[in-house]
Length: 178
Image 1: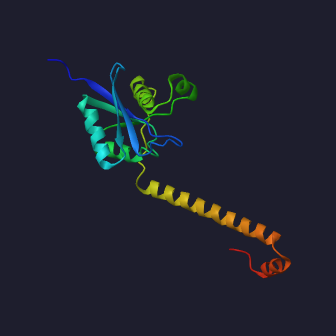
Image 2: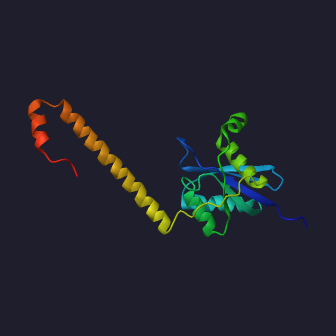
């Protein structure tokens, strides 16, 4: 009886302004690096379920390499952990290597899976939940609010400088923003 095949699945997250933010491109390679299959899945709970079932249909899944587990891939990383899969953080390949191999989602997916197989990718993605994530979210919102306030004050100051004399005098009597 032949041994069941062991596979490594991978899906790089869209980067920058990639228009495929609603699609995860998955790729499967075997333990010697042969490309077995690639397919796209929607970024929905149903899509994650189909992706995992598709990976498992190719054999025993050893690991799932992912780019962007802290951004576009955060929900898929949570889904994989909830289903007892081991997500592995994959760094984006260097630009020269990407130019040489060409840019496409399937090529990127295979490259990420190969990085997991070779051991170049071995990071454990952050959970992105709990108290630390809540504090991070509050800090991001606070920094954004401070920046918006500063921009508004600067715009009002600029408008006051170029306003007619009567308006400038009226604004000079107003208390500064707090």
